[in-house]
Amino acid sequence: MNSALRLALVGNPNAGKSALFNALTGSRQKTGNYPGTTVERRAGRFQTQHGLEVNVVDLPGTYSLSATSPDQVVTREVVLGQRDSEPLPDVILCVVDATNLKLHLRLVLELKQLGRPMLIALNMIDLATRDKIDIDVDALESALGIPVIPTVAVRRSGVKELSVELSNHLNDLVEEAAKTKPLPAWQPQDLKSLQKEAGRIAKVATRSEGIEHVMTRRLDALFLHKIAGPVILFAMLFVMFQAVFAWAETPMEWIDMGIGALADWLIASLPDNALRSLLVDGVIAGVGSVVVFLPQILILFAFILALEASGYMARGAFLMDRIMASVGLNGRAFIPLLSSFACAIPGIMATRTIDNPRDRLTTIMIAPLMTCSARIPVYTLLIAAFIPNRAVGGVFNLQGMVLFALYLAGIVSALIVAGVLKRTVTKGASQSLLMELPKYQLPNLRDLVLGLYERVKIFIARAGKFILTTMIVLWVLASYPAAPADAALPDIYYSYAGQIGRVLEILFAPIGFTWEIAISLVPGMAAREVFVGALGTVYALSGSEDQIATSLVSRLQNAWSLPTALAVMAWYVYAPQCLATLAVAKRETNSWGWMFFMAGYLTAIAYLAAGITYWTATAIIG
Image 1 (cartoon, rainbow, N blue to C red):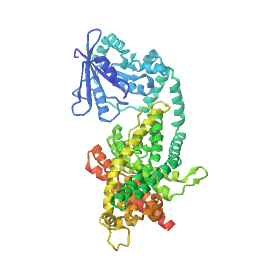
Image 2 (image 1 turned 90 degrees about the horizontal axis):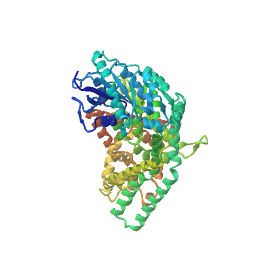
Image 3 (image 1 turned 135 degrees about the vertical axis):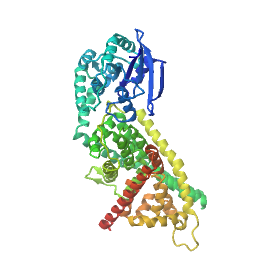
Image 4 (image 1 turned 90 degrees about the vertical axis):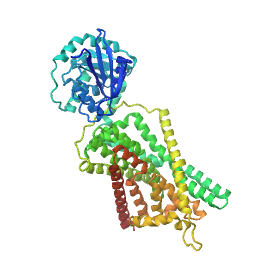
């Protein structure tokens, strides 16, 4: 054996390993990568009271030795002595969060079965005391048969005691390490039975849970119930979509009136020339058609931010785990998919938390099917134009129910596509879900306001820069060349945009799309909400000044049939992703092939869904 003791720091994510590592080693540490990986390797040294040098390696956090992500595989291999560049550790120091004993003890039991010399650092003991959690350290030590030392790593409290404990156990640990035989071939453990045993030990060692933990446990008994839980989850989502229409109606009317007044003022103040047309038909009609939906977007994000801050969002992942398992995924995919309701880009990036590469790829492929916030202006415009604003059963708003159905269609379609992918191109074994559930708490009002403020900034920035630029380009294409002197149709029909639209109409006419819709789909490839602005510009240039003063909702009611409107809604449930999302998909999969696969299958499903909707509605309605 080398003169220095080899110590491996192991623990769940966020257990305080790194803080303990820093407290033990101080400045005597170095950082690099493990050979053949991009996983960070942190190593350091410290000296015990008896003068023995101890080499410490801070291993990546893991919930289980069965994990498959690259960093957690490194942890397993080091603990098992399977990495040539890293000798088998003499002693394992497992860092446990005292405020979440039940979850963290499961990893302790896994490590204990390896038969290696081991100590436990019961960290964050100060937070446990603050939350009125009273842990009997002697009972815990007796139940595990492993020395337990309470610590507060961030304050260095208990670090000296830990060093003393290492010194006191040094001879026994060194002798035990020397006698320990090479580890047999490692086999994954039954995680459910380990979790059950961890719960039993935690109950024995915990004298008092604390009020907040008792409340969390009681709420979880309801919210995570196998029947009541999903019902409550879907009821919350249903209420959210009802609120999007019911609460936003008045502020949307104010914004719409303001935009109309601004357009009227420009018409009255400027001569009838290209500049007035650009401002009124391009900027006001285009950008204004999108900005009017800001209240609905804020209401949706207010619900999402509040659910996330309360701790309920993580429960949603567990509730969805049973459903996700039916298509070969687990509940961990729920969080990236939920993020995709805001935007598919952060949702795709959030798949990095998924251990299994095939599960991650599947989640990336279905993330675009979640209804991102950019679709809200499209949905709400068409719903306001073609779905009556009336109550159903005296309680529910019909428009809100249709919006909920569109979101639900995206979710169901994502599960179906995931099931097909997991049985074909991304076929592989599914994994159990391991996730730490935060305690319930009331959302912080300041954080909610700041979160909504950030969403407003992003939305206005897109409207003020990207959408504005697109609308100006579209106005130029829709205004030139000028119509011939004997033109019988609106000027835009003879423009470059009109010519492009009529070519695209050949492809889209079978599913009920007009050339105005077809041309608006093109800028919509850059961002979904641009479709609404494009429609505003196209129809503004298609009518007289009297029609310009009419809202876009009224224009669509006069221009489209109900089957066409329903077909466009169906199209946007599956619409091909914006270019930015496709670029992120290419980067995260490191493959042009998967990016084109995503764009291709979404386009095909969108066209088929729109066609079936149009043909069916036409047959029923006429």
